[in-house]
Figure 1 (cartoon, one colour):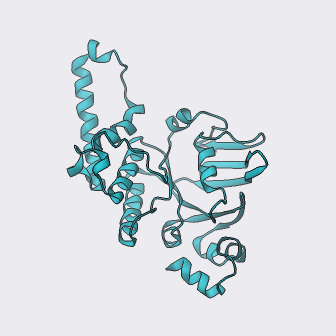
Figure 2 (figure 1 turned 30 degrees about the vertical axis):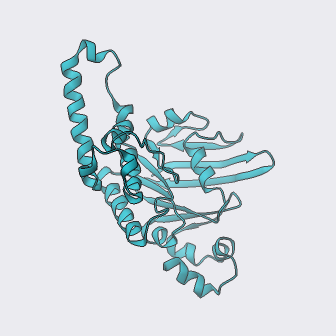
Figure 3 (figure 1 turned 135 degrees about the vertical axis):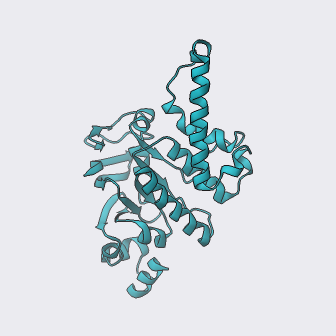
Length: 266
């Protein structure tokens, strides 16, 4: 069953066609990779899905059987579509726990006047939410850092916090934009293992953009390849890494085919 589907999705910026009639389907409970060279349209595609950009006329985006085309970002997030960013957007002055509470905020069940009217109930709910968020931090390995400012975390820990904040939104689908950026190979492996464990624990569908091809090849059920805003290939990791169109467009012809495939698996 498709959880996300795009039909003829397009976006132009003046004379530049950043996304050109891309039709794509992401099945529920799958890990779907999106790869392509720099400037191929991957980040623009994510921004269209999440309401940061509005698509061109004739485009269609469906999420969980709801038409989210041209809907604002907050509405799309409320339907269960969450994302992380390549450039982390954490609240550095807030604590680690406060950052994940920000992610949970859309699920708050009371308004601003509730503490004055039903203070005891609000305090009870706040306690339960904090316990739930501490469980999440424990699961991703940040519980002992819960009270320190996010700005004091290491690069790998900030990546985990961004992931935790997105999970706190209780999404149906999680879009990961370059989750391994700037991490050492060991930390990349640890991060992807955490992501896959979170997928099972929270019943997530994941779409991941990642330049580290080993990560995509090892974790994704299906991979779509963009080049110059167009989808040029799609299929299993084995199919994609052996597709001549991918070899030529994504990695060029500077290496022999066998060397290119070795690079994809390294």
